[in-house]
View 1 (cartoon, rainbow, N blue to C red):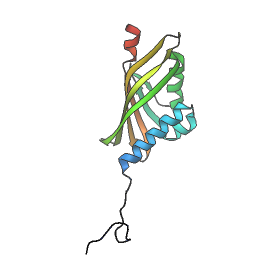
View 2: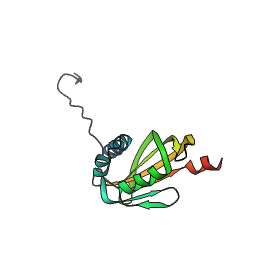
View 3: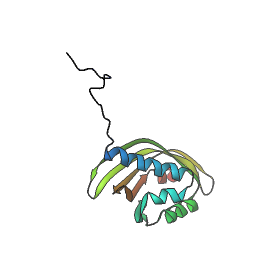
View 4: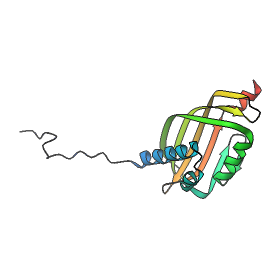
Length: 141
């Protein structure tokens, strides 16, 4: 006499993991930023939040990071290809990789630019963002 699924004798659970929740939070952050909903994106971050981008530029507020980008680019679009989460010192790290496209402030277009973001999450909020890309390589030619 075997126990069969669906006969009400075995309950199969699919519990969410902290890693999956962290990836979902970062996805919500990207979704908010994509529609310029800075309030929603900032609510997912601590204040201050450590933001460091390629070139060593540092920010503690999302608004300052966005203002810096607005001076450099007419448009930027990030396509996220992969999300990975792992334990890290001080919390959980979520790595996101993909490609950038858009145009510089002078209108020169770029596309196919590799990027990687590393988010550090603690207590369900983003406490740190580090971002790297090959974008400078597009200006060198």
